[in-house]
Length: 350
Length: 208
Image 1 (cartoon, helix red, strand yellow):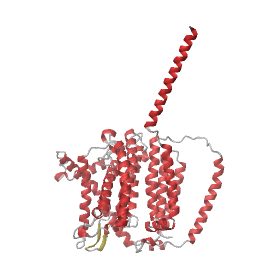
Image 2: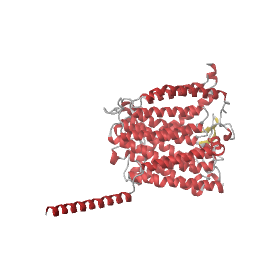
Image 3: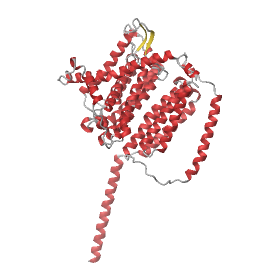
């Protein structure tokens, strides 16, 4: 058994664990902070005030909500499938957080007291595929939650979410190929490093001129559909399905898990958009001051998170047949055409 | 025994238990969940065997797409718990044991050859050229589009045929076709009525 303990690199494991903890906290904080920003921004868009009583500017509203989730009575309806009903929110939230280990937040920087360290947990050869794999597992939470609730609204919500996720996942994955053809790797860190140059503005959306913009638009639309947000929030359309797949989950901690999974998934697709199309941590003067990297990174990610709120305040919901037609008859052919375009550009230009 | 081997054994045991769970459950949703667990633990096993690309594809294609479709269909049709039916294909029972033995033999042979295989290259991050490393996207793509390009294309043609075939089977009649058929039916009905009337007329004539 001695070789068992000798084969472990304790220093590496400790470093990784600390980084995982930081990424986990970022994941936990994103729903809390984004929820407050979302409610306030939406309120201003709709000419009202929004939550402004708890703490300065209502800043502690989300924390109060979180505490309420923790202490509310946990109701399990009589007719539900008990084990799957409890299991489903866990299935939704775990893959959402597992993506965190490949968030490329910043380059290798020199931190005081610690020395040189990389601002990501790990990078590996199949980073992009890993993100796609984990986000595609997240749908089971909604589907099983909808089925286990034993209610027609929940079931319809679960069915809709599975159909929607399968349809838009195709266009989303195909739109990424334009970037992958250019970068020649699936490693997220190497994709970001490949976008350094032009004074920090050699972002894929600009550098791959026609194909980059098309891919970005397709990605953005299908990413919003993948995260079930307005205008694609049919799995939880409140005017038709009460609350969709989480109708029976009252407002207990289990609902909070679904809520967290949704926001962490939003964070993930925002980070992926930043990394693949907007240059990740690249920006002016990052070469001289590497610590600017994370700042640029989070600014870009925040832009996408804000876009979600912006769209929510602006657009009405799609009808279901419109959603399916748009995904299969417009986005998918456009993504396929874009692959051809970027392959041709890849052969003749680069 | 090192850490990786313990992980491997644990995941392998999980896969086997989940596979049994899949077969023994009466409720189709539980069976589907069992199959998803099998696929995920297989993906983890592939990772431990330095087949990273296959691991990712295993989750994306099988667990992330095909099984979602399975669960979707089970939920859509609202399949009840399977009632204990009498086996229709009784002779299959006698095939089970020989097939199981054949599978065991296959596993035995594979294990013997794998033991003779060269040790995999441990880390991909230390290598400068990932196409030289085992199981990376680059090395698989290299093999797939150079050495094995003919089998690869043959398989893709086969899959295309399957897609076209399934679309042909599931195709709905076009609206014009339906309209034409309806018109033809109406014409037939008119003719029938006319014939009926002429028969009535002739009957009346005969009676007169």
